[in-house]
Length: 318
Image (cartoon, rainbow, N blue to C red; front, side, top):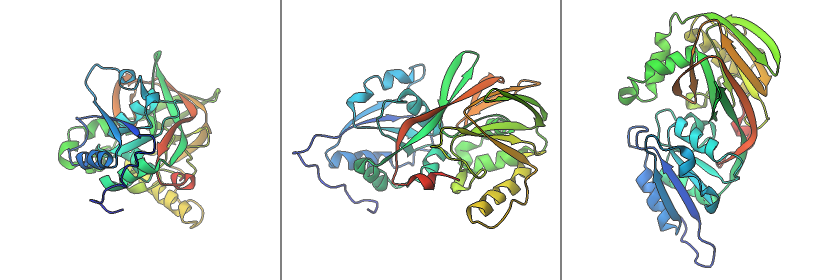
């Protein structure tokens, strides 16, 4: 279906589709096509309930009646999508990660289109894949993430991109990465499924999905449906030195031979990860910088969410 086409007409003999739309008005630059998406759903006879996020209102309030709906649409950036997903985990209600933020990495990992008509079609067709989520615990407080959580250079990159996003969009992350010429190194103390491990480096990433912008793989062998994380130990001197590992990941996807740049990082599979550092490091979950610092613990939540997508499970793997 091309943009501008309407969905098939609603058949009154069938049960009405009820969709809950939760949107973040502060996400992105306002050009996500959300008004057209909503109009297309209504033209198709969908009963659409809209709820806009407001500061200081917990996400649980927005989804307390979620089981009354056929599906949920989370319109915003990755932080918004993860918050809705965590609040609806194990409710078995399909969720659309509507790309209305800056980078929209979750939507990219799900291989979602950006056209409102195509997104509306995916909602109506109702094809969903069950995937894992992560749960982060910091000093007794828990929150969820879909993409990845990290401490160190990746969090610093996100911090430095905040003032650039309004003007440069997704390019802000690239510009921020180029500023990380000499990030702090420290000794990280980990427990990987209970097994202790120390290493010196610039950061730790706990990944559930594995694709960066333009669906380029962060590293190989990341599967969001295998019931475990891929823990990435960043040993490189700066973030730009990780670019060769991106090349290795692409080579692996194309079956072009053995890795050429294996020394910059190490990957480990785990269900539970405890991360501490010799000095406090900032934390980020799904592109959102948080005031908390290390230590943190991440737990996998197997099959916690059903994401609406037209993709197949192998298309979500790196």
